Structure formats: structure tokens, C-alpha cells
Image (cartoon, rainbow, N blue to C red; front, side):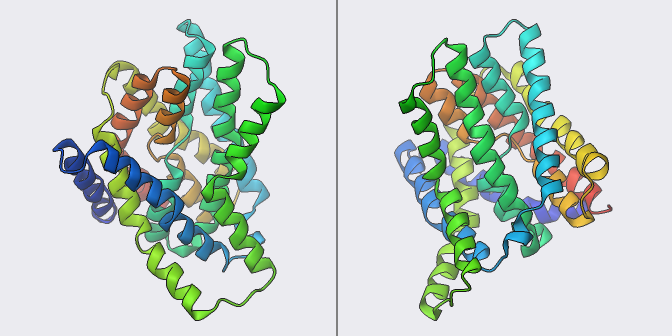
Length: 309
């Protein structure tokens, strides 16, 4: 356990540095937004393309893992929706809470962390998980908010959702890398060097950006945030363990990566969606802040457990 904690500690130290830089005013809010955009579009995308270009579709796509992740996440999502319904929350607010309860920071935090902790073999399963999060659950929250507001889906609204998926740099880079691999295209040395250099900024840049973004988030509604953090850090990994070990059994390595990925804190993009639609942004930001802070303890515990599988 201590060994796992020490291995994950550097990730959270970098997050803490970003938090301190932004909270102290050394890094202004405008710089945080630019840094996040830079990491999202360039280093992280370069890393995903580089890995995908050296993987086959079979190393990424696995039916059992896909089904396990979908069932576990939908079950967790449904539990959050049920509790929200019993609390008489509106559908849009319930959708934001369910998103915090069931979807983790698989892109910015999960990809670099799992690649380092489990090795580059973890990139394949993580790419599948990131793709499901981006395509299915990032679209689902928008659909539920729209339905909850009594709005109908126009062709323009449907196209807006599709466009956000198709132009997501993580999805684009994974798809481009897989096509490069499928066509067995050679990788010129300058291009390989460029991708290696750019990818090197992905892990520290993403972690620093996470910390900086946390510093400008509100910490209101902490009681609700505690419930949502419990769902993300405890309920979701338990549901994932049931699915990958019993309902849709996968090999031990994929099971370890999937359960660890389910134990990641709430995704930062939930706040951006909530803020854009004007639906409980403070609630989302508090859940993201608290789940990230608590994961310093809970994530090593889960990784230590799955390492014994």
C-alpha cells in the first residue's frame, strides 16, 4: 500500500503545484484557461496519436471491456438519478449530479497516470474508456439537460452534439493514430521525435492544469459534493469490479486498468458543461474539487487492491 501511495504521490504533488500557483495569483485565471486548452489540443493529443499509431484495433477494442464499462457506468449513473429523483431535483440538475457520480477524469488524469503506473499496455484499454466517456456520457448529459428543459431536438441541436464528438481532439487523435496503424504507414524520424517531445509535456501539463483549474472552482454545497464524491470514488469502482470480474469477465490486466480508471475523481469538463448550460455549476465544481482531493487516499487504495488480482 505504501509503495502504491508513493508511486501516485508525484501526480498529486504536481496537481498541488498547479493549485498553489493559481490560488496565489501567480497563474491568473486567463492563463489557466490557455494552459488547459494547450494541453488538451497539443501534448495530450500527440501522446494519444503516438500510442494509437503503434497499436492495433484489437489492442484497444474489447467487447467485454466495452460492455463492462457501459453497464457499470450506466448502473452508477442510474443510482445517482434515482437518488436525485427522491430528492425532487429537476432532470437537468440530476443529470449534472449523475455525471459527477459516474464519469471520471479519464483523459487529463487517467491516461497519463495509468500509462505510468501500469505501463504502456494500459493505453489501449484507457483509449476505449476515454472514447466511451467522450462519445456516450458527454453526449448523454446534454441530451438530459435538453429534455429536462422541455426543449425538442432540432437538426441543428443534434448536429451540435455530433460535431462536439467528431471534433474532440482526443477522439480525432485516437482515430488518426488507428488509421495510421491500420495502413501500416512508416513513421519518419522527425515526426517520431516531434511526437515524443510534444508527448513529454502531456503528463506534467495536464496535472498542473487540473490543479490550477481546481483553484478557481467554488466549494459550495459540500454535503452534496461528499455524496457525489462517494459515488465516484467508491460506488463506481465497485460496480466496475462486479462487471469486469463476474458479469463480463476480462483478463486480469484489463480488469485492473478498468477498476482503477473507475476510481478516478470526477471529470473537470462536467463543470464546463454545467456552466455553459447554467445548471448547478457550483455543485459540479465542489464535487470535482472534493473528489480530486479525496482521491489522494482512495485511488492508491484501489490500485493496491487491483494489483493483487
